Amino acid sequence: MKASELRDKDQAALAKELTELLKAQFSLRMQIATQQLSNTSQLKKVRRDIARVKTVINSKGAL
Image (cartoon, rainbow, N blue to C red):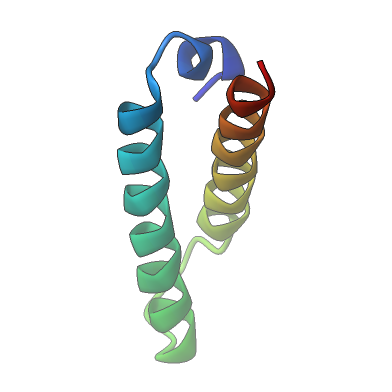
């Protein structure tokens, strides 16, 4: 997902997106722990998406 797409969303949608990403991250971590995850690059993508969402939330809060 791109930051420009996130900037178009309101605070509630961003909070929902962040919650979904955190749940996805937890699920991926559990899959790694049980050795069920074959594509470990998914975790990196989710972490970066979480950082993007948090960045947009903080920038909107500062405005």
